[in-house]
Length: 183
Image 1 (cartoon, rainbow, N blue to C red):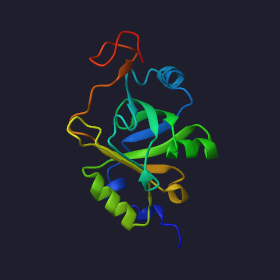
Image 2 (image 1 turned 90 degrees about the horizontal axis):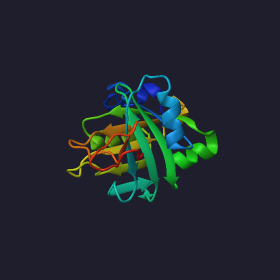
Image 3 (image 1 turned 180 degrees about the vertical axis):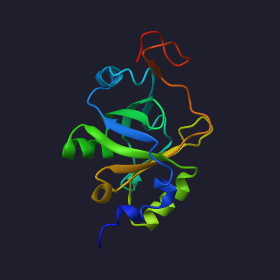
Image 4 (image 1 turned 90 degrees about the vertical axis):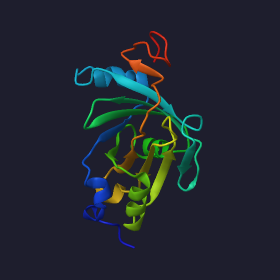
């Protein structure tokens, strides 16, 4: 079977425009210092995604046990710094094969299910998926096998209607889920 072409990626995904740039870093705190030095992004929200915070996880079609610590900053595109904590995951595979740096481009979609259906019907396999991390059990993401046509992984992101508060912020400020000075 020939690889699908980039022009064959359904409009449900790429018609939305790039909403997020995902970058793998070896250490989240160091990454925050480096990516904040430009002054482009003033604050970051920090979360840990894993079995305790994302109820439904899969990796290559099997139940997922991976966890990742992320920092979200800026808008359109949002920058997502990611530190892999536990695998196996698409993050670990990428680091082993390519090292740290640019990992994915994310596209905000109104329906993750519709995006997954359209992408898989067009020949792009789901590599990793998570859903249910919003306060109302909504919100989800799916990474697709698009390396052959895009040279990066493409991600569909359904933003939860109510996101839980971040564990921490950077620069540190007090939130309901953090203490002063904590990351």
